[in-house]
Amino acid sequence: MHNRDKFTIGRGRSCHFILNDKSVSSLHAEIAFTEDGRIKLTDLGSLNGTFRRDGDKLINITKAYVSPSDTVRFGSTELKVKEIVEALHLLKPPRPPGGGGQRLKKNPLQGKRLVRCVCGNVKSPGKPCNVCGSVTTGTYK
Image (cartoon, rainbow, N blue to C red; front, side):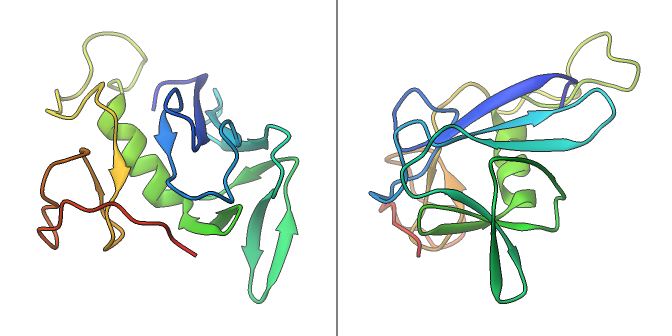
């Protein structure tokens, strides 16, 4: 990701990362990539909260740095941070080192709305999933 990129997460159609789960607020959280390469997750005043899983415990997040190996929860949907970052790369591929020039590669899904399939894969809405073949999207708990 390019430094200082910010992306919204939520149920609303205007979000960069859309979660089809009624426990997720329309504009639930924001994920930002800082200049020093860290990932900052901020809850945007959601009703059901944003959490980081620590073993069996859920740690409430207002604003925190997270790792790609962390599992986070929005409402009742749990995801690995790595999955979110991979999906966001489809929307906006990273730039080459040094910050200048063209993006590393053009992705056919770049700039398109993405949804989560019933199997958990991220895909284009209305298209068959490349993992399970389903065109259905799901809600994860």
